[in-house]
Amino acid sequence: MSQTATMAGSAPDTAVGVEPRGPRPKPFFTPTKIIIYSVLVFFTLYFLFPLYVMVVTSFKTMPEIRFGNIFALPNQINFDAWIKAWTSACTGLTCEGLAPGFWNSVKITIPSTIVSIFIAAVNGYALINWRFKGSELFFAILIFGSFIPYQVFLYPLVMITREMGIFGTLQAVIIVHTIFGMPILTLLFRNYFGSLPQELFKAARVDGAGFWRIFFEIMLPMSLPIFVVALILQVTGIWNDFLFGVVFAGTKNLPMTVQLNNIVNSAQGTPEYNVNMAATVLTGLVPLIIYFVSGKLFVRGVAAGAVKG
Image (tube, rainbow, N blue to C red; front, side, top):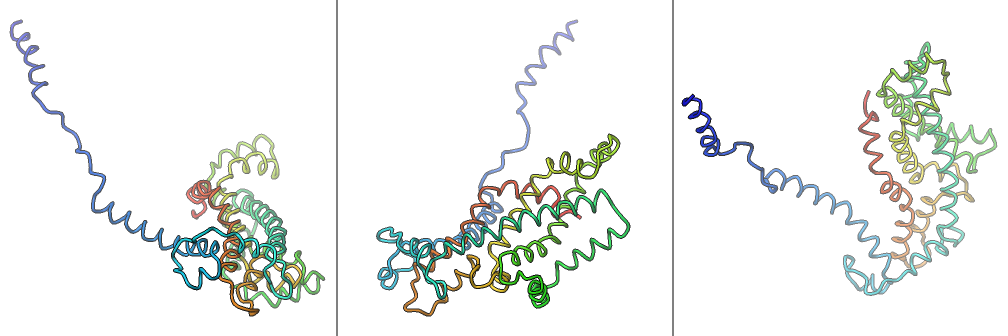
């Protein structure tokens, strides 16, 4: 009894005397973190620096640009260059600014993006869940076609669109962008649908759901991240395209990028660098806004199967 009491009485003393052990907290500024953050900050500034120069120059007047420092902030913010770039800058034989090209780019981008994403989603869904004889060969040919340079197809496509009677129209550009966007988008959707639980698809089949019902009611609600990935890729690629626009659109339907090129390379008078910079920023605003709005979903889509195979 006394021994038990002695042991019970000595236990708290021993516990009090022992210091708690555990991992020591790591300092925030370690050599590894300093190197990583220094590299990230360097490359961030490296990529943002041209954007800074463009924005700052677009708010300056021409005398301030000629006799000032290119890196200095404007003495007074001036929107005249932005207004001229949008409404009255010469884009060739006409001086109507970038506004007509903006609406042409919108008319090209929206239908091309919607149609190519929808067809690619159906292709990827069918290739992973509704396999048919020769599906793997079809998929291999489709992916192989995406690695062939676009320039190889230009002349045949010019002849095809001419025979169809749509060469030099917005319809021709839309069809070309839709065709060339499908291979890589089909790969993305196929890999993403392959990463989803197959039990959902099998359960729907057992319940009697068909091809389209499973696609619209099960697959699409679960596929928001990959749709955002496809949206960003298509909008960026189509909006920034120059080659297809200058070849297939015709002189009356030029997209914004072609008109930007005409503004910058215009040989009439002295180059207006502030107008050129404002036109450049205006042309790149749409993809930039989409990246900022849907950046998190883009990362989720890539991590959830966009690069799996």
